[in-house]
Length: 115
Image (cartoon, rainbow, N blue to C red):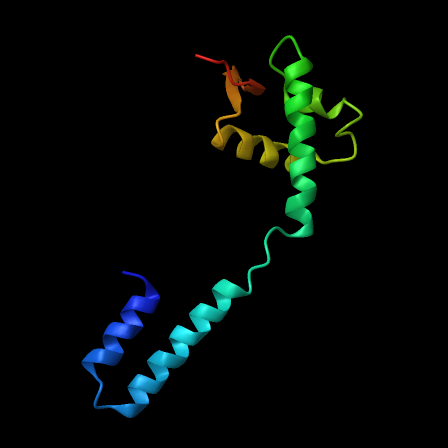
């Protein structure tokens, strides 16, 4: 059950209490306003899309799986930190675009193999 549905149920159960009904309606209005105020992607999210595209291109051009350190040697992502690239690679792994391969203590990344 969503918050909106919960507030609607509370308001209907306690319809004889004007304060509760008013409170519930205000909460429902706030939830509606929050949904309509979302404007899409932030500037950082838009910039991250471009970096992810570069990461996919780097991995696609490589003949082997690469570590984050090896990826950072490419000029397309040279200005970014290890943590930033690792986080974006994790997002690509979660999206099943990239495979994470553990070799000993090192994590390597490669374009997901087509089955």
